[in-house]
Amino acid sequence: MATPASSSAAIQTLSDLFYRSVDGFRKPEHLRFKREGAWRTTSSEEFRAAVDEVALGLVALGIGKGDHIAILSENRPEWAFADFGALVLGAATVPIYPSLTAAQVRYVLLDSGAKAIFVSTAAQAAKLAEVKRELPALGHVIGFDPSAGGLPLDELRSRGKAALASDAEAARKRAARVDASDLATLIYTSGTTGDPKGVMLTHSNLVTNALGAAHAFPQIAPDWTALSFLPLSHVFERTGHNLMIHAGATIAYAESVEKVPENMLELRPHIMLSVPRLYEKMYARINEKVARDPRLRQAIFRWALAVGCAGFELRVARREPGFWLRLKLALADRLVFSKVRARTGGRLRLFISGGAPLAREIAEFFGAVGILICEGYGLTETSPVITCNRPDRLKPGTVGLPLDGVELKIAKDGEILSRGPHIMRGYLGKPDATREAIDRDGFFRTGDLGHVDADGFLVITDRKKDIIVTSGGKNIAPQPIENKLKTNRFFTEVVMVGNRRNFTAALVVPNYDVLATWANERGLGGSREELVKRKEVVAHYMELVRAMTGDLAQFEKIKKIALLPEELSQAAGELTPTLKVKRRVVEERYKGLIDEMYRGAA
Image (cartoon, rainbow, N blue to C red; front, side):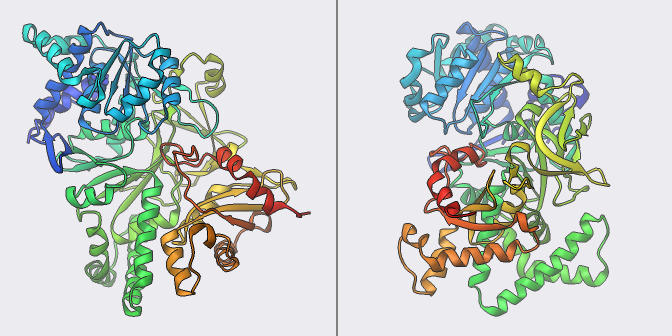
């Protein structure tokens, strides 16, 4: 397989990155996707042709450099065609989460002033139809599927193909006029509070971040397959997408979040990007299975895990295991770990975690079984990666070392600040918010609290705005406590509360599969609504909380809990599209339940 001849130094724009990949790697399977029950492929040549045709098709519609083009779609090859097609001609793309409501879609389109939009399906087109009359700037709707209506993508490509027939280099000539400082994308922060803000990211922002990530993960190779399932509307997956294109890895688009376990077995990926929720669920399923195994198998698993942890501890310390430990690791791998890895397809080399804090216990568990999770850190405004763990420089419990060219500073109050080529241009139409976010010296205020350890690794404490301040004036960081509890298989979600109260409490979403088994064994049947009200169930969860948080300071300890009968969801507005909890929404929705926990408290 061919490799790109040009160096990374020659890559200034995302168009450069794209053309270098399709021209250099010439893969028969650059992209993979599933249609009508079968996995299909897009070659490098087909990928390049699609992007060129989309770019010139948009020109035929009157779209030009500096215009804003929205994409309302799930992950699929057409998403990439639309994105790079717009970027090649110098337009900026405005990705919209497919999970958003019609009103939320309207907000993004109005605020961005998008002149055209790519829409994937009839369901997404229906949202647009509700609000299109209120969008005077929106002149064109292009449908990926025939059911989406508007101008069919095939027709748009046909117009572009006609233009290319008279000048085969027309798209590349336009790409050559794009500057590294030009706006590449407007990404609207999902945000856990307030209205979304349009984050302006340039070609330079995204290119330097992708190249920095490539330097951190040099092992990603053209013969690797990456499974893409986080929304491309989110900057984390978007940068991962750019990284895979740069490295020449085949990108396979998952059918859906629900189908990820099945797609992993079918595609046998080498690498995946995910938020911690996936790892938490995998960890819970493995522990749940072990809990049902015969005692002998449980004992073998515990032995193997202890051996694996010893080996992983040496890897973190960058030391080699001795002869006897290597022998035990080989046996543990044959008896236990190979079977765990088989559930991911058997070829997985690397998980990259971001978007929310990952519990140290989970990173260490997967490291022990031979699957690395490299946790990183960043925000939409930082393109996004500020720091990340690397396979050869790894420290669970931290979010790693800064990328090349990224500056890191801790303010006097503990807030993490960052400066460098990854920092956004600003918020669209919000100069005051931009000045508030970026100080006079060019440092971006992340809103997160943390510190740098003796080895240079960044440790996140919590979100500045999430810190709970009790009525006694004690400051409590909830995320580390919540994450620790979620390593227990009985818990799905934990949301601590207690701001301006005299003690902390928590809303708990049980893992209902595990709880149902436990309850049935004790003759405690019933619906979810009935189970969460049973004194025995609440007492069991409170006992688990006490056992797992016994080492906390007295003021940090959770004194009361309330069990929720249903999981938090995006549909209810309780989770962001990257599955982070919107604390304000949750606290407002369950205000009565929270007040009940504090009723009568002194």
